[in-house]
Image (cartoon, rainbow, N blue to C red; front, side, top):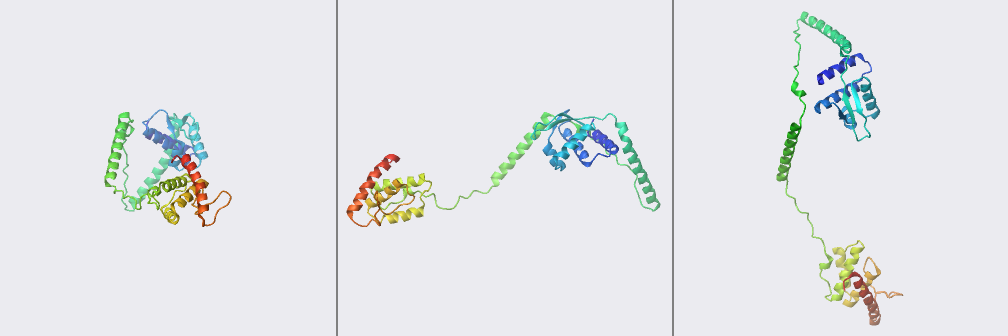
Length: 296
């Protein structure tokens, strides 16, 4: 049994049965071709999704009905049903025993065609038209029926992998060098030059940077420039107190006015006594913040 015998058997049957449609022919011939590619196994898997895509069958009901017809006509046998949509059903090709009876309709159709063809040749000869009556017989190539073996499959796999490896190496050699992205390096507010050199202001500034990182709002270069410019207009003690006050309150931005517990002093004007009082209050908060953040 080979692919030619199976296809001949099918067309003998198709001429006998009017219910044979084009989808039946396409599905059966694909099953024969698939078995040929697998080395003529006794049973093999038939993937539904790949078969529907290859045969342009868009409806699962059409596919199922076509497959069931082939089973009922005795051309294939379903050994195991698919359990779900991701598995293939296991099928088996069957050989039809009554092949002599099935060839009657096909023989009659071919005889009628050849009779009409001979009539056309005679008419052409009478008209002086050259016509050929030589038949074309294509010999069978039995090498195509040679089953695949493990050595052949392994050799093909190695050849494909080597070819793929060579292609990747060539692409890597010919690839253009990567150009680094343009732009300034990442800004670090902890390394910027501060307007005051005291240790207290430096510690307060680090606490402010960490606070902004914790609230997911890191300081930008533009914002840092504006903040330090405004802080430089105060003395170092007041500037330190303003930063610590902002961190303690959990504000998102620096408030450039010292606020007491009950009220706040607009524009922090005035007397040295009020500034000193607020500064001492904030210095107490500074110790708590530094102890909490592990910066002391």
